[in-house]
Image 1 (cartoon, rainbow, N blue to C red):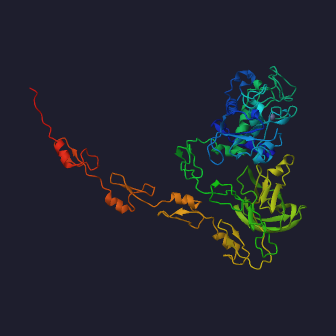
Image 2 (tube, rainbow, N blue to C red):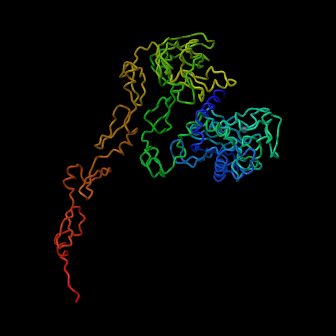
Length: 640
Ligand SMILES: [Zn+2]
């Protein structure tokens, strides 16, 4: 929380010009989760809510005139707009609305509505979309929101179906859509205007201090005893108070700055989201997996490789750009039946996991002693990990038990920047094991750590689970959003006492020990460097082949074959040969086409009684004789 506030403050200071430059448009998906038909609100009611958001955030609301003169000078057009998504996370066309029938009669603030597993609806990629769930909330709750920096899968706002939009089921006095305006304010890091305490701080200088929340519609001015409450009294008409919808009409400039800063620091994915991409653009090739039947202009996004796109899955296909729901979870263990620690459930002896890299949330180099905590369910070895060092340095990396006693360590010379380091830590079965560095090791130069948006737990092939970090700030909440030092961990369960280790490639890019001793490779590393996902290229002669590099253009042989046609040529009637791309051209070789593709001889009259061939096949006469009989010398007579 404090770090978050620092980031926001720093961003605002460094971007005073940026604050009034561009309109930011946020793609929205509305998930209607309904128990009965009444709760299944209409598209029109959803449209009315999006319209209200665009009016309120752009200060185009019809009731700006109700803002008291004393507050008019701080009233803001936030330059934030909202659009219902036109593309879903798979790139397919959408109206930005999902509808889910549920057996849950109502939901609470426990986020049940945000997961299919609890009768709700899973979020769309929360870094690209503002997810809004509309359902029956129990206990008279109007709505609630998640602040920036929380768990990704539950990010968004929830609103009761009776307080969404301004038609249909919208119910007085919360029937003008301001509940959602308020919740989206929270989602963009705005605090309640009274700072949630008596004369509390909402981190905005242009809002007066309030002694508490307001309800109904107070008479102006409504003053309090707070020292920061002036003659104009409470700004009870601010969207971040609790007054009736008809009484609200203002965001302030400082609230605007906080929201713009929150988007740029905590939600930057919204700035590049293609969620509202013009649907005239898309993949226009019917053979591609993401073909858009409504796209008119091809935007180069066509994807021909389907497969598992989850990097942690056993059958991850690095070439796949379209997920076909085929992902199989990795299960780490010894796969050799002759080994003493053979695990019949395991499908891989090596797995990778943890945060993939440091590109999420925010963060920086850190000089203190902090660590990750994890549980281990199998004896295994942490082979290596990626780190980011501020400078070249000598660092002792440590694996410790849950009391902080060192179980294994290694001292390495690291270079500045990103690198994979070998650790070879022997991990016993245990809980709350610590992965950190020796005390004081980073005092001079730090290692990178993220201070927002970590997504615990990080499961590594059912062998390890990184559960949290040692960060203690923000009432303990930082433990679940900070992530320290160790990225993309490589974990192995070596087979023990195996009589005959050898490896084969499974044809999907993974190595396994067949247990027979007859595998094609004698070492795992030699297998891995030769074992690539099958892919296909067209050889230009109508044949598909696997280049063996994993980098073929097509992920499926069928798709390759339908795109890979024998070259053929047609004559364009103007003396030029071209390949129609269908395999059906009249000539099978370019030379035979060219020798047959000549401009037909035609004739035109030159107006002086002579016939000539214009050379382009477009003459008016197809034979010389017909031209000559029509082509006469002009002559004149006097009419007397
Ligand atoms: Zn609130």
